[in-house]
Length: 219
Image (tube, rainbow, N blue to C red; front, side, top):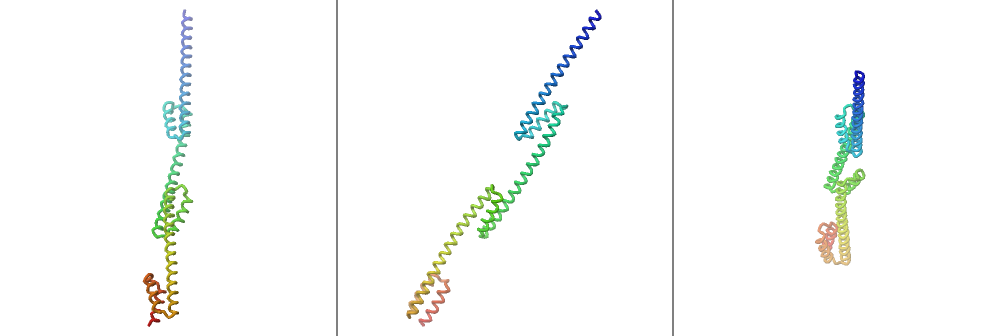
C-alpha cells in the first residue's frame, strides 16, 4: 500500500513535470512566433521607407520580450539605419537650401542687370545659371521674361536704326537738292528747300551748315 502510494506520487510528479515542460515549450514557441512576426512587420515597414515606425514596433516588441537578443540586435541595426536616413535627409535639405539661395542670387543679379538695361547680359547670366540648375522653374520663368525684354529692345533698336537711316537719307537728299539749286544759281530756292528740311530735322548740323552757305549766296 505504501509502495503503491509512493509510485502514484512519483507518477503524478512526473506527469506534472511533463505538463509544465509542454507548457513552457508552448509558451516559448508562442514567444518565438510573436518575435518573428514583429521582426517581419518591422522589416516590411523599413522596406517601405517607414524606418521610424519599424523602430517603434521593435521597441514595443522588446518591452514584451526584454530577453530577446534577436530583438535587441535588430533595434540597434534599425536605430543606426534611422540615424543614417536622418543624416541623409539633412544633407539633402542643406543642398536644397544652398541651391535655392544660389538661384535667388542669380535672379537678383539678373534683375539688377535688367534694371540697368543690360538685358543681353541678364539673358546670358540666366542661361548659364539654368545650365547649372536645369530644373529650376524660377530661373526658367526669369529667363523667359528677360528674353521677351531682349526681343522688345532689339525690335526698338532696329526701329530706331531704320528711322536714323531714313533720316540720313532724307537729309542727304535735301543737301544734294540744295547743291544742285546752288550750282544752277537758284540760291533762294535752295534756301527754301533747306529751311523746309531743317524744319523737319532741326538738329541736323549738315542742313544748318548748308543753309548758312545758301543764305550767303543769296546775299
